[in-house]
Length: 298
Image (cartoon, rainbow, N blue to C red; front, side, top):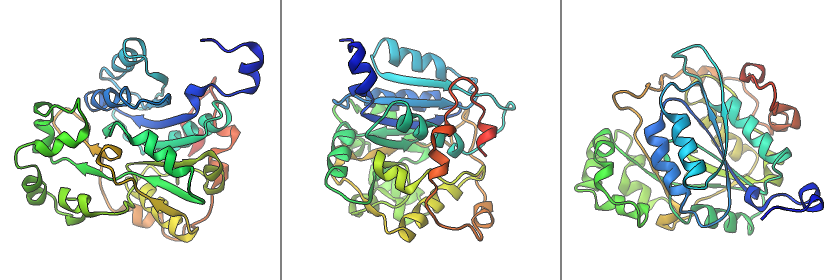
């Protein structure tokens, strides 16, 4: 149903009340599985997807879910030097700014293309944010091993992501393959809150208080600064515990998928960085719909 002129001028579109922002680069297969589960969320929402120069079928996948599955997707294709990897922080901030100042979204979450959401995630995240003060929602999730990722399509997730637990030796394989015991499936089940950002966000009001995410082209810096800034600013982190408000972190270290360059440079990047609110990173000026160049945002 179309809004009349007065409604469109003064009232945000209900479909934009909840916005989810992500950046992707040549992870079409992983994005496909994730988008399938946004179809099942049961609440209107908008996906803002920045494609950082993909050469795979990312655009075709987005078109399919937009046209055939009726997801409300705003898709922005970026340009960069072929094969270059960069952290998504610069355009995630542009997406947050777009959701805040253009879409007038009330709840804004940021994530990655490989993150499969449980079917109750959006509903429970927004419901919890309505009861909290200065707090962020941060989902926890099962981190798949490369072997589990290769077998993911053998598990029927159509009834919910909890079925990932039925994968043969799911817990045993997670324990054997994961070098960080805090990220095993057993540890995830026990965790009451989750600090590392894989899917989470704030109300629009609290995004303005907290500001955008730290911008760096080095892997790891964004997540660490996010966690430490929350602590410094006394931002409460709340994690929904219902399994269908969790996520699945697909493993992207597979043949044919460009690897994320992991190193410890983020430690040097963050040395001396002030942990403060950064509202300038998500100001109205950060979104330039007709002349978007992420190099201007670094």
